[in-house]
Length: 336
Image 1 (cartoon, one colour):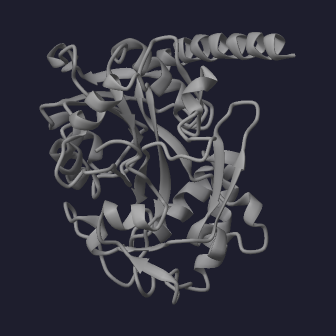
Image 2 (cartoon, helix red, strand yellow):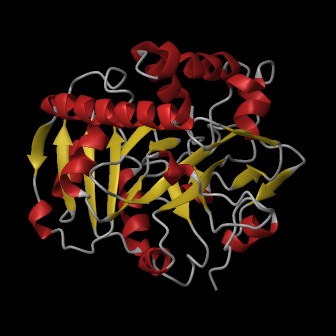
């Protein structure tokens, strides 16, 4: 059974890579600065649509972490975000008007671009509303982390998605372009999470937080997955299966310790819940480009009619990565 299962997963990976190659024909190169990528550069890959208000801080945050180059796919933005990204000196930009859903929610496009640009590079796959936090990130650049991972022969690094939200109504405080979103959405759930193991792909499946508590309170098992493996020492034979929730080969999903210890891990601060969220949710519900015809966004829009407050008496205000480690949401493992 084990040999047969491994063979089937190998075939699946080959099909995913072939699919990514076919979907690459949907991409149009807008700005090519890839000749500036050096052999050891750390690369960010992202897909975006209408994120002009977020992009200035997104670029600043990841440049400050030590990212060297951004490879981005604009999915038919009309708010000036694509033009802004194209002006950045460290961005290689592609564009497409094709279906995000039909490209497996952008995974096919990014699988192709990682195959093309990222072989033997450390790559970070994040959305514009995700801020990567890792142990010692307040005093050490991301290269210190990847150097330690290289020295430890570790090729993937896990991070839980942590939903951040404001105190009060989601749209009460306007978010300004270029602003740190944590100045607005600085609260999170320190508990209220469930974890299961996927025995086929070996990844953990984490759910919970404010979205399960508010938007999926009647069916919490339908809440979005929070487990991610965003940081990978890429090889052109690799492929993401479902967003950054799981990869093939499946050994890359073993970013946790099964024997009672702790592996180093990080957090993705998910700043979705700003004042832009309501209009964004309605737009995505109409577009039906997300999983299950946008059922997640249907839940958002239905609940937003009641103007819910995500903050509760158990909410914690974000301070730094050490706080998250004390709460058991991430770990420095044996990295000292």
